[in-house]
Image (cartoon, protein in one colour):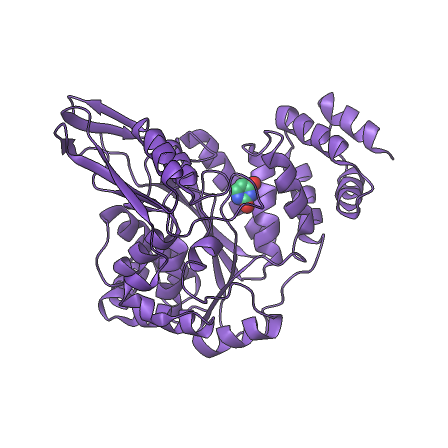
Length: 434
Ligand code: URA
């Protein structure tokens, strides 16, 4: 077997055998297959697809390409949650404490942001002194003691995904269903939870831009999860405009705290309750999603979820005083507002455009090595469907660098479309697949 023949077979529309997929993953991880051959195969897959059998084999090989996590020392049904990536998507910071407060153990690994999408690990690092790495026994003990731990992905888990994802990112092969499904599910299965809730983002600020593609991704991931014996539910949710009002690391943590205090924007609050309801139900702390939803609301109104967030921050070395004193977060040096250029309804706020503006302000990385500005970001004052007058303040941009402030502001302005007629509501939760 050799890599040339494997590439040729897929290029000509053939089906890869289990051995060929194993050969590729093993060789790419150990360095014997070079990047140029791996990228050629990824591009051949991009154009000629994988069938379900190939996809299951690829997921499996990636899942077992490194260590897998054993959560059996943690009592109860462990529930994980994963978003396919969005702008302003801070739901993990809200749903993890809600579900944990309801008695569902959360032992979660999260990623960093890349490109225009944010990542939970970067957000958590805006909390002073918060540690996003824990030793395996510290991780397990913390979940047993307080019911929640969230850390960054260790380099030993799914190294194949780590290498392939980085290669896809620079070879225009990210937004392909079987590649996304195998990437996400290999990580989720290796991470050891008993049940998985997937938030599949759909729209202009997501990898899946229409409902058919999002449904196909969601269906496939649910099937992979269930075939592996993990109860998996996917929710397809809107990502045409940013989620919530805050985009950027410390701004998003503050918004999450506000939601747990019972405040915060309607969309992020509703999505968080719906995702928490599913997590609580899968964790067998509610008989169905409706009861799970009521429990999730109760966790917020009683203050138990906020208290859980405080315990979680403290356990991971962070300063839990941030819950009541937002001045403890990194503060931006510069800020500037963007005003509406005309009267009318806000017809569109392009999520990808706002994500890119936030990245230009310093909140995201352009390369994996770049440092990020934890104080940088955007606060929106209006959402799609709101009526504005020329001169109204649409948003405020924050940055620690004056030149970046100007760049981000210019990019943000391009994200807005105004019309005389009110746009139809974009459904926040489009489908639940279980
Ligand atoms: N998130 C992942 O983890 N992998 C992908 O391929 C896309 C989004």
